[in-house]
Each structure stands twice: as C-alpha cells, then as structure tokens.
Length: 129
Image (cartoon, rainbow, N blue to C red; front, side, top):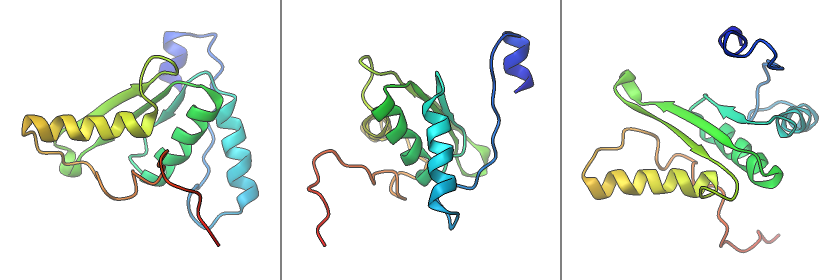
C-alpha cells in the first residue's frame, strides 16, 4: 500500500484481509467481492486457484482489468500477467494460453496448472441437480 502511494499520493487504496474460498460465511465473501468489484484494477497476488477464479469472475462480470502473479515452488521463476476487457482474453483463458505457450516452447511450467485453475468453463452446460 505504501509503495502505491509513493507512486501516486492521491491513489485511494483499500487493504482488506479476508479469508476467501474457505469456510467463512457467504456474506463475508459476497461483501469482499462487492468491494473488489468497485476497484479500478483487480490485483491477485495469492497464487491460489480459488482466489484467482473469484477475481477472474469479478473482473469479467464487472469489465475490470485483472493483474495476477505467481511465484513457482522454491521461488525459482514465476509469472506476472494481465487481462484487460476488450483487449486481452478473459483471465481464465489468458492463463490457459500462458500454460499452453510454455508447453509449445518446451518450457517447464512449474505453476499449479491443473489444481483448480480451470474451474470456470464457458462451454460447459449448467450443473444439474
């Protein structure tokens, strides 16, 4: 927060620490997501699939840019990526494209490529009862 205000002292920065994706109440998760939806830019620095998917859903529905980062296991390598509405693919697709590009180049992907990052699918039918 201090670093952002060093760059722009007029920036309005809200820092909230909320456990999301666990056993917290749906009301607290909903309140946190509504707060995130009001941001100009959504930043996910958790490297957590559940949080990424929540942030990606808000970014897509509210047409907000999302910036996310992941540090690979052992601190060797990582990614920083972005998804801007009407410019870049939606966040889930953009992340999938990064994984595919690395595979095509023969570059080992040390991120958690299959541990819940593909939960949001545009082509999947609605879940039945």
